[in-house]
Image 1 (spheres, chains in turn cyan, red):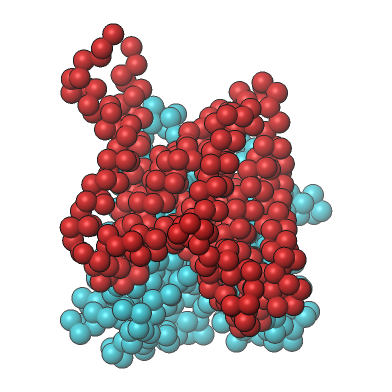
Image 2 (cartoon, rainbow over the protein chains, first blue to last red):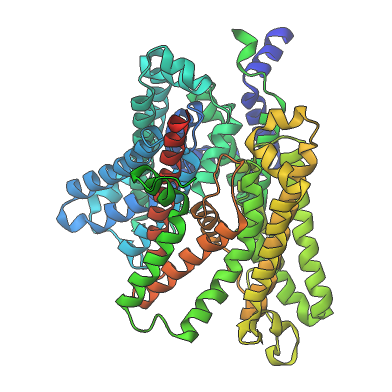
Length: 314
Length: 324
């Protein structure tokens, strides 16, 4: 029994971290382990979590996407601002533009062979500029009740948004494990040239992954404003930080070639719990920011120290 | 022996000196678009704004050449500015500036240890640093801003607002540092080492270069430059908001990349970085002159960075195939 526990801990270190969080916050605050609060956590992490599914694929490819926060903001602004043309059009525009920007990033990385870091760094700034231009620095409030009703709806005891998130995780994990595209992701990230020589269409693969993360960012933005019914110019600022933290915390290597959606889910939960827990413990927002930054550094430290991810079960 | 001036040579020359050509075309274009552009006052304004970005860009050039990146400079500018401006009235301008520089040394040392010695990923480490430092800034000010009570009675104002022979002091500081570190980069063994570890890290280790010390030093340099910029910025504004440095890291990287420094490491130059910073400064100013709000610059900078890096990638591919 003890043997299998330590094997489990080694294989999925995120479980240990998750358990520690639950125990710590559960003991520190009487409210933490209530159904109400746990539902709250899942709801809050759904936004970051949906983007984390896309980011997992990107990181497995040994790429990175810093523009997700800005794409989220642009999509959200469009979803709010275009409602006068009909809700369906607004949603289509929201998801479409997000995917399009992702596709542009994907093109630049795969075909123009530009480093994904600089492509998405530029996009992070440029798309944010587009958001400011479109919103003219004023918040956009939505007019369609249907969207707001959807955002606050439940299926049984669980919020619909959380259900969507769970579905996307399951979908993502299935794709990663059982489809060609998913298996190729690990190959491309592990050894780009070998994957190319093995016949994998690496360019198309990378392109698809970037388009997909653009889509997830847009979806996250849509679901976010379905709850708040308001899109501001600075929405989603620093979200990329939390998404990357969650994915790396969950065990996906920054150098690529290894990762899993379930692990990412664990990372997302931990980040969500820490934010929620700090809130419950009345930690001031400024300290929260400092702590999130330090967590990211610590996460990278662990990532660098324990490089032996996939070797344990070849 | 004279080389033939055929199409190949011309294309090669354009690709090598494309930056300067683009700069000249840009100036000509903008000065025709609006007549408020080419006034002495405006040019001085541009140079003074460019100086802040430029000071940081000097340090960032070193970091990029060594094959690393530093995203925390923007938040460091904010932190230094609020601390120095705040301490100015409490312990005097001189000690406040020293504290500011020490903050730069400390942050740079931390980054240097993480990336240089512990071999952590510089992108994520400095990304975390960006957030952590911003949090520290907010904690220090408690959410309000720092301000100097009597801007006219202190010599600190000279740093950001003074003139020497008609040239703004920030520009003198910028060009002076550019000269100093440009020479350091190209004419000393240390500079050679920086290029070496950026160009081929493993080989440089095998030749005995102490890569961890070199990387440590470039991060310290970059952070000290950022702190210096924060000090000058604080002097010019005589006040500091919490987010005063936000976004600087992108503009600095844009300037350095535009100047031809490769993100892969191993190549770059301070003079070209200066030109890159100037180009971005002129574009930003030109856009404002043409009436566009400040955030339009971001979109334009995005396009420019992509264009510049794309050209860089293309030219490298061509170079590889043109070797005999």
